[in-house]
Length: 286
Image 1 (cartoon, rainbow, N blue to C red):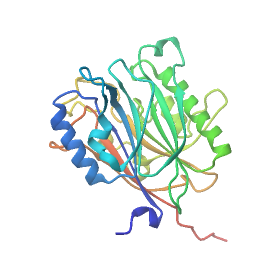
Image 2: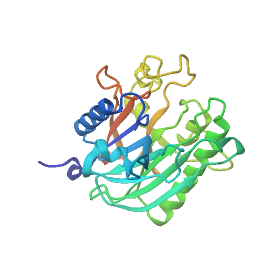
Image 3: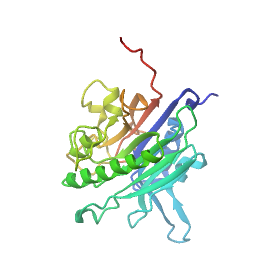
Image 4: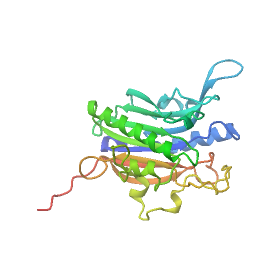
């Protein structure tokens, strides 16, 4: 069967896995089945566990348990005491890998905030994709830190592109709504310390309403959500970097919420999956 990539198409998914909380064996089965169904090419995962097993010392790789052998995994080295961190999964070989230090102020010392910048060697016709898993501070009063952390990521991506040009997809749990300074910076609406970048928000690109209610990914409607009125609701994103002309270098064709049905809600976050494609040339108007 012809794969998406042969037609210049790519599928990206993101989910905060929520570690091994709750009834992990049952949750693992749902994760395994749903990710097999989604059949994503690139996956950005947060709150994943990589740690020695308490009794044997063997390394427990939570992501490998539910994704199986079909993906190459890149795990962050920055992790909580229980082994919780972030992971990127790719169907294709990876090249350069950078882990970014997001400890930008004294207030970030007690959380394993980090970002992975991974060069994915996607076959033609798409070619190189820089996949970014950005996991900033979560505290409600740390938007200052999240904005500085977004700046670190934005600058690192631009530096990487000067040596190895390609597409850029940033996906993850960004812990901020679209009107926050950190998201406004990433989407080209706000400059920070003389720097500006521009990424297209996949959800906003594919939904007519500016803020669609179904775009909420951290909601009190979720039975796993311990917070009765967390002030931020749409906090998980798939973002595609824009080029010099025409918007994102990969056209966003769909973006839908995942892991949000009664039988698939296995985290305190809902996930997202987006389909991307090479842009089609538009006829120039004379």
